Amino acid sequence: MAEHDTPRAEAPPSLKDAGWLKRPETVRVFAALSGDDVETRAVGGAVRDALLGRPVTDIDFATTAVPEKVMALARKAGLKAIPTGIAHGTVTVVADGVSCEITTLRRDIETFGRHAKVAFTTDWSEDAQRRDFTLNALYAGADGTLYDPLGGYEDLLAGRVRFIGDAVARIREDYLRILRFFRFNAYYGKEPLDAAGLSACVKERNGLVQLSAERIATELKRLLVAPRAFEGVEALFDFGLLSDILGSAPRLDRLARLIAIETACDREPNGILRLAALSVFAAEDAPRLAARFKLSNAEQAVLALAADETFDAALPDEAAAKRLLYGIGAERFPLKVLLAWAASGAPADADGWRRALTLPERWQAPAFPLRGPDITALGDFKGPEIGATLRALEQHWIEGGFAEDREQLLARAKELAQT
Image (cartoon, rainbow, N blue to C red; front, side, top):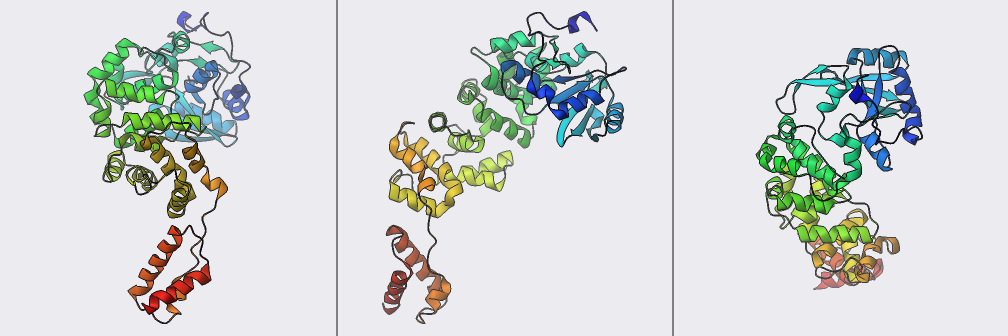
């Protein structure tokens, strides 16, 4: 083991008590890929979040074993091994139903964007040098020993998102790192932004056009749900990147109010909802953004809620809220209320809006009592008149607060037949 690969004195001596190291799948992966001439360590997010005391979800591993050997050792241990990215050194190992990515240590031979040519290595320092930020070049052994070859722990504690080596060179290897710089600052950073990293991101921003829509959308949605999402988005705007990413001017004020409302109401952040608040001015913005970022139909429907102002002026009135809930359903209702609340300029502690948001907990929208055969049975309606009559009756019923029952509505239908 090289001198620079020894655990750093400034770092905690061990993560041995970390719960994620004791999970059955973690133990089995380490056991399968350790011993003889093979060394395996957890790397990146799991180590980083454990050091901050944050929950650890996915665990990625780095190993000195080449992919074919990883697969052989995993299968020998009774684990499923899938060659998901074997050309670039990545194998997915499934242990106890949990998928773990195992990547062989690598060094760059040629770099041309995301598709760099790599060679496998057994040098942990070489592997660390090709990663993006120092706080992602943190490794932990099965016994919890921390390895920090590039000073990532100090940067993590300082809230400093720092590129490894030359920032421009790291960005040119993959221009998505521009957005990752702002996202990681929104999750882990403290002001001010690292000057060298920021300067490189601004200088290389034209490279964003080389990225696929899906990669940009994924990174943007992750940024939008970060603990300091607004600061990250505001920084993108201040340094001239946000409008190019969105293809339009942003509504920073509405996003800020939405985040404040979500926080005050203890709601989980919703990336698409926040994108709608940030980006949608008019109805045509929803399909434009959906096409730009290749969003799903469900995501486009959320964007469309921001442009539909049918109920905005009447909310948060209880009767208007009931009409809205009946019209769009309980799933989309809170999303629309949150967007309308943010657009209204009302404070995050506004009682009327808070009560409107909780309407589905207190009231279930009734079903309209009549159907087409009910009108046909009256004998006085034909063809398109049936649908038009039903719509008129339903609108009357809604405006009356859903109060009239089936018999009352049939009586009114008879009156309409006689006019």
